[in-house]
Image (tube, rainbow, N blue to C red):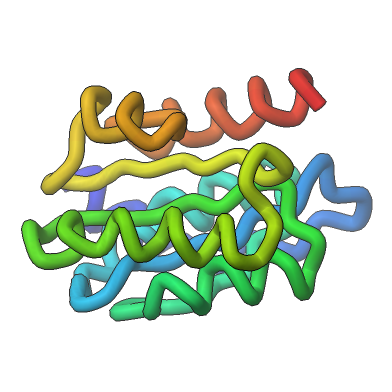
Length: 142
């Protein structure tokens, strides 16, 4: 029931002095909002500015939005096998925007694991608490 409680939580306020900027979304064709929303709200509470590209977001949307807002982190929710199959497109889009090595990539969701993250040089988290800890760790490394 914790996921239900999480979804019913009020929207956290925008942080006045964010510790970093995160572009977050669900990779197309995945349309599962709950996991992404749990992580987004947790990151916001932890004082990260979150720019949401939404559900079923094309790979290019993550990269172009990250470049536009000068993001520190791209957080991608991947909960279906077809979305997992789009990870190479995501990485191509990030490289095409010149962001490879400049932006931290974080992935999580039911369709991916640490091995998938390691293949693309991303951070992997299973829970919203892990996502916050990883995001803070990424900011300390900058």
